[in-house]
Amino acid sequence: MDHPADEPHDAPAAAPDEPRSWICVVSREDALVARATDAVRLSATGEQRLGRLRAGDGLLLYSPREQNKAGEKVQRFTAVGVVTGVAPYQRDDDLHGSWFRDVVFDRPTGEVQVRPLLGALSFVRDAKGWGVVFRPGFLSVTQADFDLVRRHMAATTAPRGEPVVAEE
Image 1 (cartoon, rainbow, N blue to C red):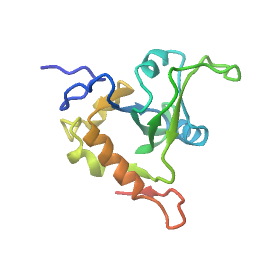
Image 2: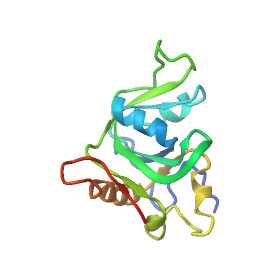
Image 3: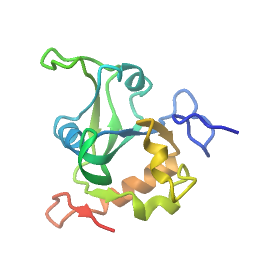
Image 4: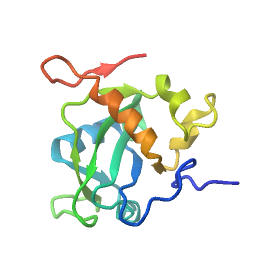
């Protein structure tokens, strides 16, 4: 059976009042801004995606590159948090027509390389072509996958709480 890219592969659908878990693909640069402002930003076409999120849903940010479609490869989970607020919104100070959604990001957490986790993530079916699962830019994942990444990110901090990058 084919699975849409934005539906979990192994988990039954969450009850209407249960939190769900998501991955949003953004540049590392955008992830750092999101962490600093507690709001994730998507392009002008992001309203529908962000509208699928509900308050209490878990959100992981995955960054394939440093900048949008450019820069050094990153391939890390760069932020984790919980969605707040009731709906996506636009801001007067944003000149690009972007859409925003409030998220309380966990602090302190580090960034975690995706490669060491590939064998444990249920939504990765092919370790060779693993990057394909992130191409849609937005996907629903199981609570177990979300919790696994969150635990690794929480364990990746310096003694004084500064985030660090976990290398392979």
